[in-house]
Image 1 (cartoon, rainbow, N blue to C red):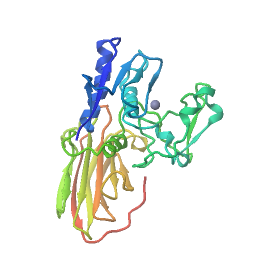
Image 2: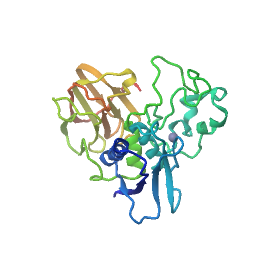
Image 3: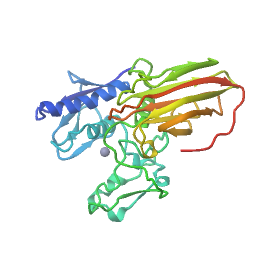
Image 4: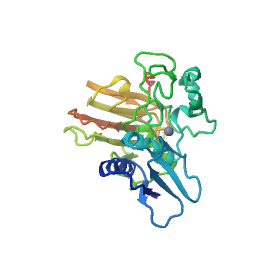
Length: 318
Ligand SMILES: [Zn+2]
């Protein structure tokens, strides 16, 4: 069902700032089962106030008011508000994940002395999905470093192009899926884009509005499950989505299983004129399509699937 988070907002925010905060709340309403509702008589609620800096407690702290500090004006930006609300929902920083040492190196010598605790590793994080450089909960490369261009976080292994870390534009596709997983958001608790196919021999699906351009901030999921012992063969009939290095903006993510926790088979963006065919190694495939807040003129994609009686190895690409 729905998860209600009562809130109170300080009277210090002007209309524009309130609109930014409400827009972040609306993102959770649209994509998850979390609902920020004005506090009436609830004992436990968040109090959004003009404190020093941008911060929030992680998860529900107890039976009282808990502060979400959104300092004016620096913290009243949608991506920052989304970040603080993710803390409220119970999420730590991405770079604090128990498995982070396989993905980033923390350069402690470059971090401002009193800020190192923001880079601590937590052994007890629930890592439902793959480590997500694109998470709104990840710090940037130079967060809290001693000098402006000095890195505090290095992506490992070093590579070109290097994933961008520290985006504060949107909930990443995996941020959304993690919230849905943690709160067990059922059908009907968010604006569904995509659908589930169960035991169908064949079918098709497409990006929203196809062949017209897809909207900004779309998040669609398709779970295709065929009969036991069979495999899912999906063919994308051409793809036209906005291109970006490592597909960190708009993206199609294909997972070899029934949800976002399954291994990633392919990450696709840009323009692909030919067909792209992918076969699962089990009876399910989970496909996500996500677009960032920038509206593009790209048309998206159409795909067909069919049940296949045999599988095949696929090139392992992340
Ligand atoms: Zn934070």
